[in-house]
Length: 481
Image (cartoon, rainbow, N blue to C red):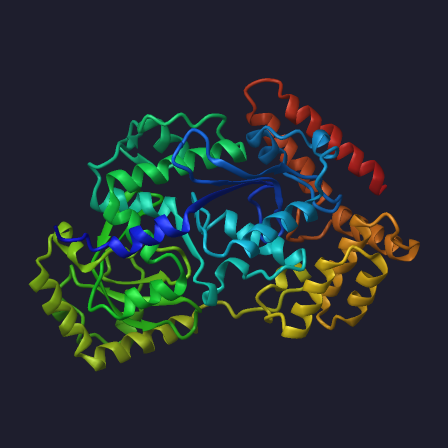
């Protein structure tokens, strides 16, 4: 019997095992400044009803990080109760980092994590002195599959293999809770981290059984290095996405053209479902107007966005014969003039964008510079010691101003022996953050009160969580004033 094309990735899945992650957070206003209020990390086992519970914790928040009232109400997290949690935010981030450092081979699964959970976790690692790119280490071949990207691919190419819920307008709803219910999976207490992870692991198992080609394609393209290889070393591949607004399934059979020189990780392709002859004689200016436009065959994929790259054989599910796909892709690849014009078109579009501006605040400076080896080693040493004086010495050796700011905050909030001058400096920082009336990117007290008013307007009944949130905001306000 012939082995399936995905045998290698099936073996990899069985060898490495899978864990699921979900975060409940302070909000969704600005991912750079939002932080986890709760995290669950569970391991997939043969008994889906009893996954291995690796992490299931809530955490205390430092006063300068205010949660949104709406986020607390949705996740049913009482901020007054959070104040009594054993773990601080720094402790919770350290616990997550420790697991991922010790287990680089586990396949990580999330639901919309590429856009949400992993972005917030990256910024949380950064502000806790951990490597923000811990989960993207190419040398360790870490793998991540985003089940939200996977379910879009299934809806495009194998929509009859699992059940999909559609609203009264006929638009498909791909939210995790709706996907679970429609396929006979009890989502439990939705928007609690542990139940959300139990649900996503059951969905992962469903996809593995019902759509194995797509599930294992997700593993095959489980990191940037693997994705780039699949997108550039094959003459063509297949790719599907569901446009959020229209909920329209878009199936593509792309061939690679170039990497956008102006935007990191942005790869540009031509969809061979269209006839190349209609485009290969266009000027760079004409091409620039088509890239990523509706119904255009010229489009981009983020190489670090957990895309699911399907093998060439799926072209038959996109109304293309293999010969048609090969002929059209070859026509594109052999036309160097067209490819050069696409490259120039990317440059033309880059000049129309607003110029990049330097960020003012350390949390926003994550992409300004990589952390050099010296500061990376000092950060590691900072984590390994519990001795306050040693941590203070390490702080004084650091040269990266972003890390120096973060280290000072950690020392002030985590150590009861913090000297008065450092504590005083932190309290001034707290007050400046929360009482700032300018248009700043974080949640000030004013923004927090506004979020409460908005949440109260949309609440169906008296909410104990919103009442507790009001009390919490008042406690923080009294502390600041």
